[in-house]
Amino acid sequence: QLQLVESGGGLVQPGGSLRLSCAASGFTLENYVIGWFRQAPGKEREGVSCISSSGGSKQYADSVKGRFTISRDNAKNTVYLQMNSLKPEDTASYYCAAGKSGSIVQRMCLMTQPSRFSSWGQGTQVTVSS
Image (cartoon, rainbow, N blue to C red; front, side):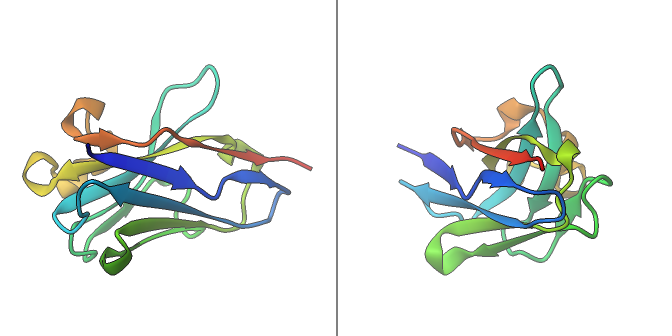
């Protein structure tokens, strides 16, 4: 069983911060590209950020550049998404996904079809509201 579990979501005021975690079980993340995606009710899924297996390459959606930071700790088998200066438009369910390096073109990661990722988490809700 290959499983990803997200955590860290919640309710936060505009301008606040949250750190999301994506923890793997049943496999190690060392050889996988990890992506964070989000979806709000009535809207299409949006790629938020991706990180290469080594951590040396990262991608961010224009809407979150300068506010979000993706990182990974392979020793803990976990990937993080630090979200600062949160805005109401960041409200969504956030999902992490793992894809084998050979199946993901890193520079195109945010636009990759969902089926190219081997595993998906169940999602964690982020709500930004005053």
